[in-house]
Amino acid sequence: MTPKTRWFRKSGLTVIALAFSLYAGLSQAAYEVNFQTPATQLGRDVYDLHMWMMYVITVVFIAVFGMMFYSIFAHRKSRGHKAAQFHDNVAVEIAWTIIPLLILVVMAIPATKTILKMRDTTNPDITIKATGYQWKWGYDYLKGEGAGISFKSNLTTPQDQIRNKAPKGENYLLEVDNVVVVPIGKKIRILTTANDVIHSWAVPALAVKQDAIPGFVRDTSFRADREGVYRGQCSELCGKDHGFMPIVVHVVSAGKYTQWVDDQKKLMAATADDPTKTYTAEEMKARGEKVYATNCAACHQATGKGIPGTFPALDGDKTVLGPKEAQINIVLNGRPGTAMANFGKQLNDVEIAAVITYTRNAWGNKTGETIQPADVTAGRK
Image 1 (cartoon, rainbow, N blue to C red):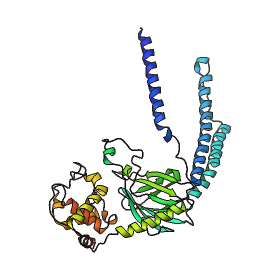
Image 2: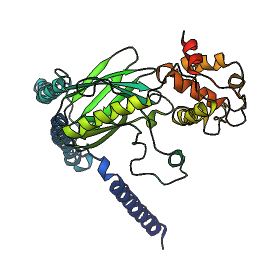
Image 3: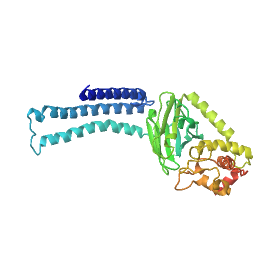
Image 4: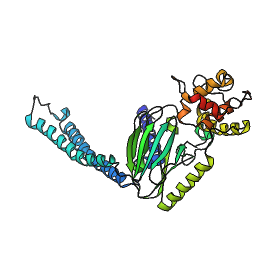
């Protein structure tokens, strides 16, 4: 076999291998090529606008590159052609200025109409405030049926899946403990803000994406016209666990929504924390373990050992083993210049007291001390 033959054979095999790998990749990611199936009329408008602009861009691409490649091929030097020498052509310059301008105007008109529809948040049936935290979402129902309901929404994907110790689930990194529930056919206004850094509340199937900025309140809205479960994520790079704060919206019938509202209000009444109560050590440690797993384990780890060089260990930490006032202050207000967030706005006094009690008595920490909600209340003053 000659060197030339070997080269052609090797090149052919390489091309075939690349083709198969490309086909396999496309077959795996086919569902990601286009938009999610819209669940709102606005979503369909956005999808149609996107496709129409793609058609326009494709036509322009084919026309421009087709003319360019034809000119290169038909007027190549090997056929005896020589490059023309000229400095300007007024007609051509006018044409390549006016034609793109007209194309942009034709594209801008429907785009502007769609953007105006996206910005219309007037006369909502239900208003929900979504607050971004590092790294979870908090929801407060402010107007309409369900007003007064509040909850936090945390990622529930098991850590074993995240650390590749278990197979990935069907909704990997897109599953939460508490979902946003809204009724079908109602206009839902979402107010967005943030507690720490910039986040972004985005659910593609509902055609909504709105930044959540600390100190500001922005808004967006949607009206779902079919029931279902719609998933999104924070789409603003917001820190270590940016990819771990999903959004899940359940669109249900009016009857199911009313039932959900009743159930939520009963649950809130039954589980309301009393910051004036004195709890036993066992009650606080059991509650604190759950709070720690939800809010602290991602950084400090379930073992309390932290991540060396990145997140400090709580097992044996001098602050955890020292005066309670110092630890309460850090949990309430965070630690500037580090990833330690201020949990004073995220957790109530009972939850903070419980998690501090847990950390002071877990792993190798055996202070025997029970922190009460009253201690946290005093630390807020």
